Length: 491
Image: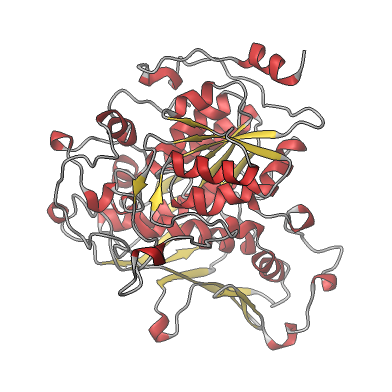
């Protein structure tokens, strides 16, 4: 009996398309983590075939000979989309194709769907073996799949990840990891209980520049850390429709069945409306049913780096203060739920204050993660390491054996390869679930203040609850996600 035959017999799961609660509290018993036999490849299923999947994660897996992408899952086969970021003025349609997002993958930048990813995979392997799947539950129930890469909108992350982990499948979950603090806690709990390898899709944790700067800050090479500065993008609507709230019939590429599954646990719109400005590709993050705006979208990167440099990966700040935003009145933010402009501070128990502002290149504020130290700033600005003058010649070989070392992917492996390392070596990798949860909890804390229109709130990192004034309201309104249409979390 070979590995595939054994797995098929031992780990097959019952499945029914119509059973939305399949992965709820009374779901199939937890399966042991998938173990890969020598000389076998890790079979990876891609769930969600949008811009991030085709431009970042799929190319990352394709370049690793130890795994094979065997499934492309999306409820849409081919969907026209919008340029990720600002469309170049006067750009012809041909200019928006063959984008080189991260790994040199030549795929259409303004088209997504399972067929697009299948073709991308088949072109790489030189065959037609990649399968297209409509429903993510079929991927979870597939006994030939060892690991899943979840690239869906955020409102699906927790439900799919927990179902996959309980099925013994290893999980690469794109950031922002969760839609709420309660979801993240549930995901971290199941990850610990099941022992699967879990990688949060925060590529910064595999980036040698970030790791180098964090090691300097963490080990005191700049002296005492006195504060910090983070710059992330503002919450303006990036693509396509410029804030239009107009409803429209379902586009030809979205069937009623696909539309129902796309919305899934999110509250459906009145008359099941389709709103192109948020429901066409890349737009959903600006509505709170599906995403939490740019505070979570980029905070998932930069807050994580701050945490590592402070040595608080599994803890966090004790307060959010000085929260400012331009959040619209409630009756004007049904579609575009989040503030376009914002700023706030994270305060840690040792008194370190991290200022969070928006990128403003015109005024000299690039994307950055910086620790203020007694000797000067240490961090990463616009992708480059910055250090005080006396550390200009410091290299990796200058770290001491007694220093606290931050995990660095083996052989300078990239993020997807580090995930495969973890699976094959039966261990966690550089961005485990518990860490991803702590990072995105910080963004959820800030968003709670924005949503409640308050300037500050306390936080207990040990108990993971809001504290002080407004705590009860924040726990009631901002702590957990709502689930609709028969879907449950299943933790």
